[in-house]
Image (tube, rainbow, N blue to C red; front, side, top):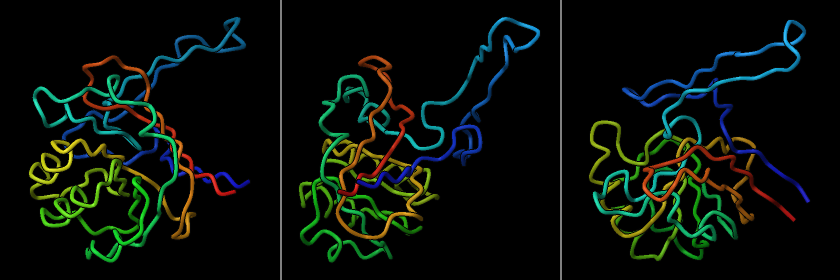
Length: 185
């Protein structure tokens, strides 16, 4: 079995413009103290993270209300140049896109029509940088969970098992950092 970590290191991660960057404070430090203790601060959309429907849908499900089964199971990693239909042919319900192309409105609609349950991208936002809201609303409004900020450089295109569980931040939180791992048998 091979495990491929596809997560950004949190304190070195890319930060979406306008989001609070993650940080930490050493509250206690050995040897002066008897133990080490660190406080952290972050935006739930820092680094590799899940967008829950509540991120753009007012009455959408929060991350803690999403079924855990969405975040574990068969997935397809595919190279992505902006043309979605060939990628969707025969892919799993969890689809991770390698490459920097933004998901367009048309691609988002095709993803929904194909029955994809989780869509992952390497960028910090699934939609185009100039106008990400429409794509988020299409996908999240249809119940497609988004996994953003992936690092897929070590993952060849193909089939894997994905493990990318969010933190349990309660039923109303709009997103969560994850530790995303691909498993190859």
